[in-house]
Image (cartoon, rainbow, N blue to C red; front, side, top):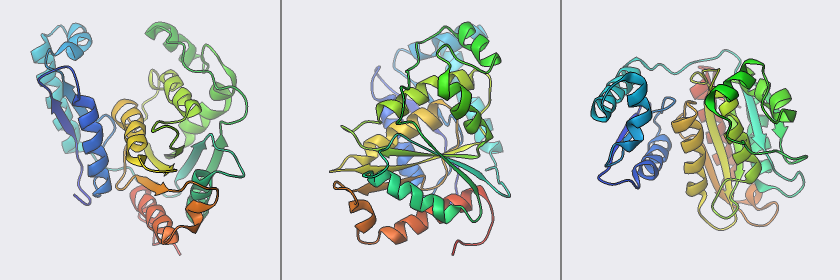
Length: 280
C-alpha cells in the first residue's frame, strides 16, 4: 500500500462494529504506507438509520443516500492529491507534564528534527481548565464560530484554534491513560466542532505519538485517527503514528532503536508534507 490512497466503505448487518472495524483498518492502511483523505469512510449500519439525517437533507431514501455517499467518496478518492508545502507549519498539541512525560520527550525530539525544514510550534493544554463541548445546537455553534469564539471562549478560542487554522500538520501527543485519549485532548477535539462548522480542514494533516506504559497504543491511535481523520476531516499521512511502550520517566528515549524510529517517523512526515531532501 505504500504511496497509495485509501478510502473505506463499512457495511454492517447490525448496528455495531462498523466504525471500530473501519478505525482498525484505517490504522493498518496508514501504517502500511497509505494516505487516507479527510473523511475517508462511508459506513452503513444494518438499519441504515445512520443515514437518516443526510437523507432528510437531500430528500432521498436511506438506501439512495447511502449509494450517493459511496459515489461521492469514490469521486473524492479519484481526485485526491496530497497537498505539499514549501515550508510546512507544524503544530504539536499535548497535555503532558513537562519533566516526566515520555510522550513529550518523543514529541520534542521529532520537532527538533523537523525544525530545519518546518515552522514548528508547541501548545500545552495541561495548565488551566479545558472545558469540554457543551453540545450547542448547530446554528448556535455556527453563530459563535462566525464570531471566532465559542460558548466557553477562553484559551481554546483565543489561541489554540487560530494556531490550528494556521498549521499544515497537527501532531498530537497522546499518552495512553487507561487505553484512552486524555481528557484535555478529548475536550479539544470535541470543541473543534466550533471550527469545522465554518472551516474546511481537508488540506491539513494529522499525526500522533502514543506512549503506553504497558500495551494498547493502537487503541489510542485508533481513537485519534477516528476523531481527527474519519470525523473532523484531516488527512492521515503514511505511517502517521509513532507507537512506543515506555512506563518509567525517560524509558522512551532510552529504548533500543528509538533514535532510528524517531528519524524514520520524522522523515516520513516531511516526505508527506513536502518534497525536500532527507533530514540529516
